[in-house]
Image 1 (cartoon, one colour):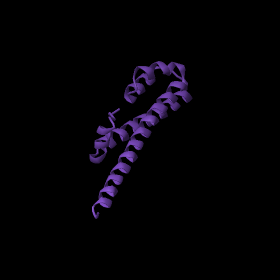
Image 2 (tube, rainbow, N blue to C red):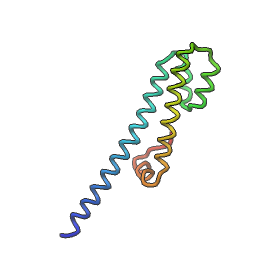
Image 3 (cartoon, helix red, strand yellow):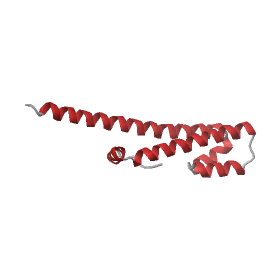
Image 4 (cartoon, rainbow, N blue to C red):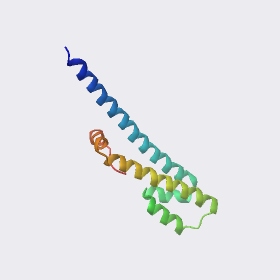
Length: 111
């Protein structure tokens, strides 16, 4: 009877860790989708770029090629920077040791 509470606590702790990490990873993915939607809705001319690729470096290069208003270009550049930061944070979190186990179990992939 002495080990049963220990096993229950260990299992509960592992379950809480799994749910917390899964929630954090899902929140990062949802944030990425939301930022892409904001970028897509910012300007219809940019919508073509966003559907083709979600790679921030390619989006910045395509943004520099197009002649846009300064305000729209600055907003788009800010959103693209946020996309890049979010992608880096998500990928770094997936590479860390206990978090990559949860990522493999929940089938999260790098962006």
